[in-house]
Amino acid sequence: MRAIAKVGGAVGVILLATSLSACTDGSEAASGPSSTEVTSVGLMVQDLGNPFFSSMSNGVEAAAKELGASYTAQDGRQDLGAQNDQIDAFIQQGIDVILVNAVDSDGIGPAVTRAINAGITVVAVDVGAKNAQATVTTDNVQAGRISCEFLANKIGGAGDILLVDGTPTTSIEDRVQGCNEALAEFPDIKIVGQQNGDNGRDKALTLTTDMITASPDIKGIFGINDPTALGANLAAKQAGLNDLIITGVDGSPEAVKDMTSGDSMFQATAAQDPYLLGTTALEMAVKLRAGDKLDEDLVLVPSTLVDVDNVGEYKGWK
Image (cartoon, rainbow, N blue to C red; front, side):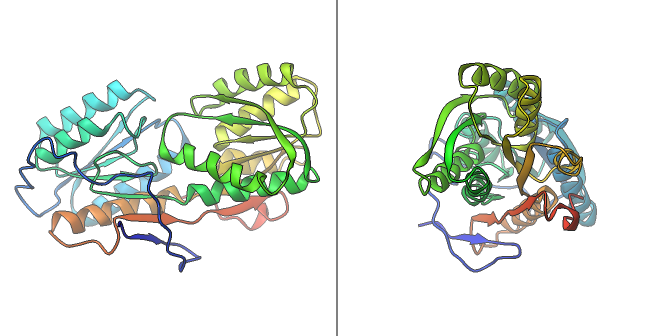
């Protein structure tokens, strides 16, 4: 059984998660690191154009600087093939640590194994990555739950809603699970449309426009992250709707700006701390490389609900 801890403001509940694997597949024998020092760090993210990943990169860069290690960040461009090539490039460079934010949690597994067998320490950050040696992520089940609880209560516990889904990663799957858990307490709420986007605003705009056309009498929308929810918000406005409840996950600057505009349908987001995710991932990698045993190989960071009423107290991302 894997040890799992929660970090942040609400430490205490120990959770069991089975969706993330942190074991090599055993197909090859790992050579082990040639040195226990961390002199070079690489971060791979899904999309550097997303402010969430920019904040994560800021955290890793600051932590690497404290170590005196070189640092580089790679943009996966939501492309599994690109991330495979990036890992192979890191192997050729002989980098010490890879922090991977996978485009595809299962699909990245063979490349992670190649890196570990080359003596690189690999930690998954924000989403699970098959065969990674450790993982730090937001408690995404909790994030989806609190976002959809807010939505359900705001629409009065009844009505049709849309769910704008995302890419095949553990974080997205967990948010949908949490949302469904919340909605199970509201039998008069029905998800009448659910489609997978690419976690971005433009795709969400297109998908939500189509779903609204098919189901024009909806009362709310849950987007799996803030860009998705904001794209859905724009689609609703363009469809002439002005009284929906729309929620997301992230706590992004764009979400804060929208919520404070005074007339937005975007009402709440389950805020994450990408800077903390990055620094925690590197801390775990340093311990692993030194041969130390982690207290837990999966760390869950709780999210907090930011809504139109408390957004003024929210400090935002670093």
